[in-house]
Image 1 (cartoon, rainbow, N blue to C red):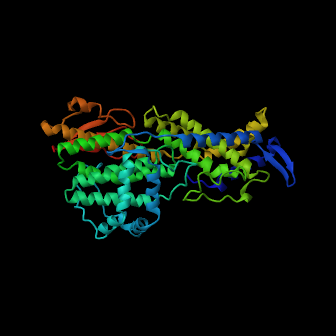
Image 2: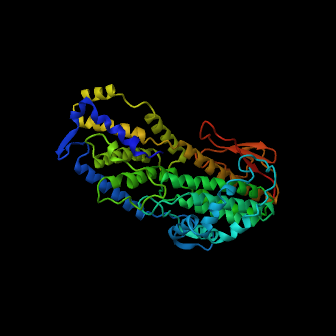
Image 3: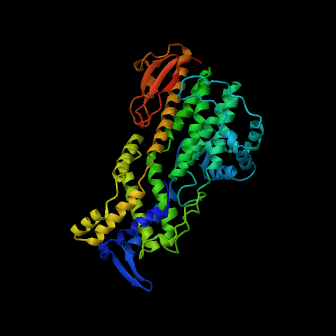
Length: 478
């Protein structure tokens, strides 16, 4: 979302309509001030946001440790140090120097294609030096995966939001190193890199972070899936497959639900952008300025008579309305697909043309409460600017979750075939214990399984109009 204050508050020119007399005015030394949000309601908004902050600070995120022995406490200190190490210091500098190379040179492979890579991975000359430089950061990924609690320390109002570039580079480094290990048959080494890294990037967005960090979390995990799929297609031993299946089950169980991160984006917007505008006594912004700075808002862009505090209060009301609507339609106890459905309904409702001045005047003329009618129209216009155009991110999340489920099913199936048996020719031939795993965790519906050479093709409900092809599940025996 483009959080441009100029575009947002130009819409407040609704108070310039001929019906502007319906805006309550307060005379001051500089002339009339338009007051659509009374002082007592602004005070209520402050209390409400402070309550949100308190809830965020008190939140706990229990989830099973991925590695043994588990470490007591939350991932906060380890995650903060991990982010610091990728944004400053020796590893950060080395990652930045090789940023372009890290983004290139990896094979296209699983989990989508179902075919072997076109050519074997050849580790570049610089990879060994970069691994040695960043070894302390790679070790920290292991410690994050051992923690018993997984709340991200970068939730709104708690800490400065980090620059995501170092984290993206770190994910690419892990992927390169995993491909290098897979190329020489070091499957154990590849899995020991990939699975803890998946958990660490998962935890980055746990507990209600802004959409920026959620997107980084999803993209980083997607970067790690191709080498993971390649490793799980190799002739692994039954114990190795069973261990991988257990860890994939933990990752699936700990996947961050959209009901956590969708409303959090609006809360981050309110706390970091609008709350500081309510008055000089507010935090600037809560939790520290984001690493990716928000655009400055020149006061001259406000309509005449609209103070910065009034504009901020209106924006908070509009954002709160959207956040509450998302909370109603997107719940933890429901499949994530329901969140996408609710989000699309909101997007559709707010994607139309804003009302014309004549329509606005007509509404005001028919209303018995002019000030309330004008407030509702301004909030409707602001919500149109703040409309949650996040469908593509949820579709990425669906593909990530679907791929993890398919890889887990593959590991379980191949481990079961170690004692004999053939690849199932159809869905009904799956062994009894695996029937429950043949579900799309995004929709809760059964995966569509079709026989294919050497395995099965699995696909859930298509997340969007441009859904990728089905996932290939290899059935070759260990």
